[in-house]
Length: 88
Image (cartoon, rainbow, N blue to C red; front, top):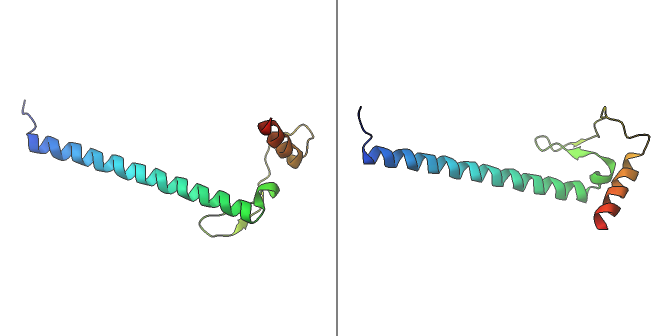
């Protein structure tokens, strides 16, 4: 069986490290996008309404109707309960 030369081993390791670096850069860019979206949601008052901004088009998207039950509770009341609970 033939052995890999040290130079080829170096290129393999370097390529893997480059791929890892690109992956981390991608994660950071995604985190930056999430942070900006949160800031814009807050700026335009979308957090309380449940609306969001579509990052590709820049349009405000109305809240999606979910299939899960809230046991008859209003969504805004649930948000207030969550904030109060988190503050305690």
